[in-house]
Length: 312
Image (cartoon, rainbow, N blue to C red):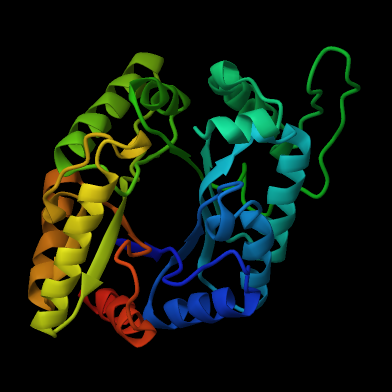
């Protein structure tokens, strides 16, 4: 099973040195991929340019893959996006995994003058131009544009791996029709994950494309031999679930922590990871940032390091 993670500490200060430190530690512990989300106009939580941050991480690491959980295509020009991804793939020696998405925030679409109702069509058209450009085809964005050749091309052929972040039946059908792995929200309960992966497989079959072998699952993970700390973390996560339930993409969130997080002592976490493998066919686990308020950084780092020891 492949092991990845998002930063355990990140803020709007955009501290490249701290991100690189975390990725370097994770690389040494055995993590295979380092993931950054994208979001705009969210104050201290904003990460508007994940590829720029990953370029800094590339310079301070050697083997860990550099990944995005949701690089938002509708707000980007397809050729410029293709160039940026190709440059990062070159800089990193072919270590990019591109998780792409459509986005959902009304304010973001309004700010970028993008029609929210057309986001899926824009997403598909953008991705089509990008994949053809990466393969060395002469491409034009529309009928009025002059065809151009992309340079440089990415190291990985025909292009970096593409995973599709999706939420809801329409997005799942689109992800399946493209034949790319589906990357779920880390807050999805297990029952919904099971349904969503089945929808994704059906969409692949209906489109006549091969079902991808990758089954990535993002999860809040915390492991400690300190039983009191584990109990405290579970209480905080339950409170977070209550606070988020019914709001936006968190609507329908399960109140049961074990339905969307993996928290416990080492043996319990190892068993839970094995459960995800057997029940959902998980091939990649991506350890996400904890939604538990303030916790001492040393405890977080110990949890991240210990998690790597539990993954087989």
